[in-house]
Structures are given as structure tokens and as C-alpha cells.
Image (cartoon, rainbow, N blue to C red; front, side):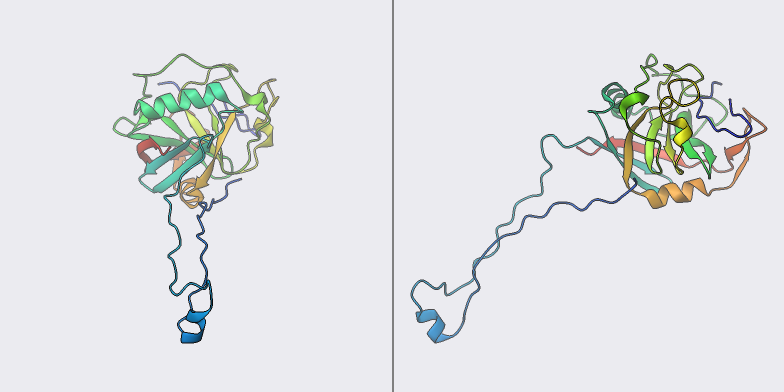
Length: 232
């Protein structure tokens, strides 16, 4: 439920920053074309090309997931060390293609964008086939609901999260552990590419929700998650 002045992220029934890939820099001595220079003992007469190596990620790199949406590409970096149960759960849904052709069904421009639970082809019904059992709430992991972070949506029961998630578009400290119910909402990653897409989604036109007419959060044209895939 959503109180008049306090937002909560519920499951409906029925710092974002860019990263620069590491670069391999080759080393070589400068070449000289003059006759005198070439005669100097031990001096190279031609330049050797810098060594090139394919860019590789460290073995302990954090898992990344790409959301290919109808409004652009979003890349998430997850935190398995901080939220192992939640990350494993989310990756299961990604690898099972559960999120494919689902929508962002709840959008509040001053709060968050929520998705992962409704089919694009059936906007009035929740996707239930393939849902796993609810998971343990890991909100006490030290991660905060800052802009650009991704967290699990749930019901009023602390340990009820399944597949639905949300991306914060504001500093939602009221959702941080222990929050208003002694638990809060578990952050398990962040947007590292495509925060501009998140910003576009948060600003789409919305109307009164069919599940909560007092809340203007249902997109008129819901953004679709066309495909979710692991990048590592």
C-alpha cells in the first residue's frame, strides 16, 4: 500500500555512474629515421607496434545484466558479496528469460520505476508462471536506496520478494534498513550504463493505477523490457 506521504514499493497481485573499460597500454622506444641516429649502437631503427591484448574482466568481477528496453539500453552491476541470495534470485530470472517482454508497470517520477512482473501482452495481469518462492530480505547489507540503485519490490511482508524490482530515481532513505517496518527494501546493484534511459522512463505519461486509483503511476504506454541478459 502507499500512504499519503510515504512511498513504499509493493508487489502488485492480479550512484549511477559510468565506467571506463581498462586499457592495455603497450610500451615501445621511438624510431629515428636519420642516418646518424640509425648508426648509434643499440638504437632501434624501426618502431615496434604496441602489444595489443583483448580486454578481459577480472575473474572476481561483479556480474552485469543488460536490460534491452523499448526506450533504450540499461546495464546493471550486481553486488553478490552484499546480497548473495538476492543476486542469485535475480540472475535466475534473467537466465530463465522471465523478464523478457515484461513491462515497467509502475512509474513515479519522484520515487522509482518498477517492473519485472507484468507481461507486455497482458497489462492487466501479473506474470506468475515461472515464479520462485519468496526470498529472504537482505536489506541490512549496508547498501542504500540511492538514485540509480536497483532493489527488490515486495509486499508488506518483509520476506516476500520474488521477481519484481525497482530502480530508484531519488534518494529514498526511507526505504533503507530498518525503514518503517524493521526491514526496509534490499538494494542489490546499480545502474552503470543507461541512466539517461531510466530518466526518460521516469518522465513518461502516467494515469491512475488500475490497482490503486489514488496513485497516478500506471504508464499510458508502458516501456517494455524486450530482453534481459547477462553480460559476463
